[in-house]
Image (cartoon, rainbow, N blue to C red):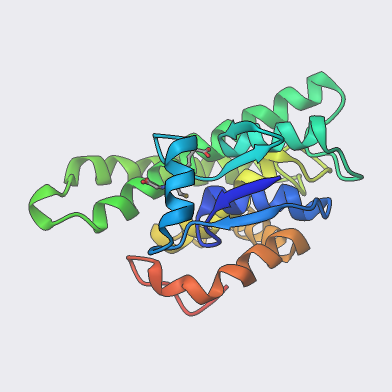
Length: 217
Ligand SMILES: N[C@@H](CCC(=O)N[C@@H](CS)C(=O)NCC(=O)O)C(=O)O
């Protein structure tokens, strides 16, 4: 398998967690600026140019969640990120959508806006994104009161989405101190060996963070 990705990208880290959880072998096709060969392969695979993209025996798999579903179906390992019980899996997928849509998306909005020229900035959209993050943090804090992982006691797809989402969201729009359950959950995610590895591999690229990476994590 080949993964077109960059180590500092949040959605790539989401897919890498799944690969690292089961030590699944793959070739990292690094999307680094200046590597025109990889860039051309990637653009041919997916004209929308959103990463990660997985290629498995000629099949192109788009979207981090679907890559994780694909790995669970075609390359299962001891760690199952999608529970076999379909009812439990539904809760996992619901939380996966929560982290993508209501944490990662507003985080990306704020970060993306910061690299626009001043005249192209979207103040209204950024304010909306900050409000969405505050509401999402509050809801999640309540949800995590008695949980270790997002969908219960077992690490899952939802936690693979949560780890980079909360990692970068806290850098972008800090999680308020009152949300102790979210902070504790973020710490658990950072201590998970698969995510700790992804974070370590991305350390050399921290200067890419447009808002300035804080000196922690
Ligand atoms: N819905 C996609 C989102 C992927 C995504 O937004 N990736 C970012 C990197 S974290 C990207 O491709 N950015 C490049 C761009 O926006 O041009 C997924 O779940 O994989």
